[in-house]
Length: 374
Image 1 (cartoon, rainbow, N blue to C red):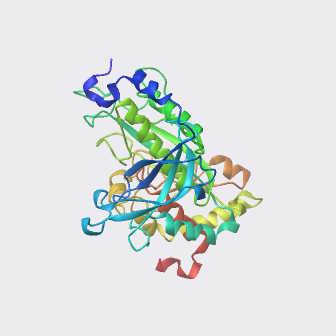
Image 2 (cartoon, helix red, strand yellow):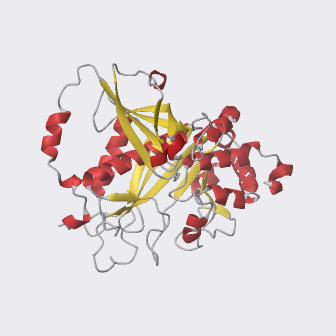
Image 3 (cartoon, helix red, strand yellow):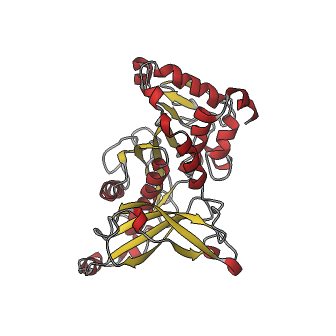
């Protein structure tokens, strides 16, 4: 039995009473929940308003504003910031016709906020649109109790060593599967392009995959998938952390492996194009490391040690089917001679807009003679 002290008080409220109110008709009104990234670059905020009718596209949703001084994004003397709707999803918590809308944040002067990496990413994706660049991101995360101890772990000790947990089954191997399955269904209902999930190597650590997504959609769908994860965990009274190394010692860290494929990589002879892209990535390793976690590599320093299925943060490497390399070419891609590559360096708490932007820039936009300068 789960120690009730490890879950939040709000999760213990009577859900049958809550459902009674959720079942009430809305009389043609629509609730729209605005979601945005706060000043930490990792945290998500949200608030809800009523519209007189169901929006059919994101363009039907009006701009809004919020108090940036309470989200680490503005001074109290000039705190109003703009919410610009950019992507709309169905709401799996209050159901149709209600919506979730992901927003960009603009400052008082309508310039992008410091943590609005989407603005720059969108410009790059528009520039490389004809290359049809696809992404798939593998989001690892760890479930924690309210005491910040991994969910399901012994209170005064550790579970058995890693080995039986990856893709495991059984109460002694899989901790928190209810949350994983509910999150999966919530993503499918919302319209997030989730494509799979599995238990990870460390107990209480899980992964979901989003993609393939083209261009800017990758960041949009992954951020909304993260919001849904935190929201589902809220209902269960536990915490999902994206910390790249939540437990010190002989335990795996958490990454956000990023799979990349352009139209040329998917066509006959695509393996050569993949190898050319990897060569460019090798010459820009340090630039990418700075973009792959919110603290410019300091978080990834704890994870990319060369152990626990990671490469060293200091060195660039690539190989077929090598999970200890910076870039992995899947074995099937090597056999087929075309497909995609996997960048294993991004941390679990990376901003997908920053990651996809720098990958697209390095692989498709940086002239070879300028690579060393980047």
